[in-house]
Image (tube, rainbow, N blue to C red; front, top):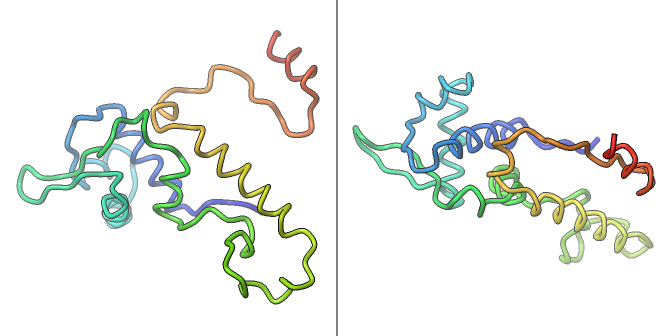
Length: 155
């Protein structure tokens, strides 16, 4: 099963909350209360996001964290990569040889790379700003035809 970590999920929750007031400076305890997550978890995630330059941070009494860029400029792929590392379905996604013992006999490596690119492209196509609003239209389900999807959206 393909699943991102709780850390990435919580990071998206935190950033989505911050994106509702993008110029506001939040401290970790404030955010922990707002999103109902444990303070140690929030603190760890905020540090990782700041290290990835998705957040600005300032120390001190009036310090805290603020978005480093506008929510429209931050993608889900960036957030997930910052918290979980490179987005990869399998180990052979990288071009580095020697990652897999089956590499020399593998006939589907390029197909895995296509799948990974599709996932990465989908995540690059969704911004933090979009995550602050509920989805207002039906999503296309995998395997459905374009005609079925159009008919469902029309109803």
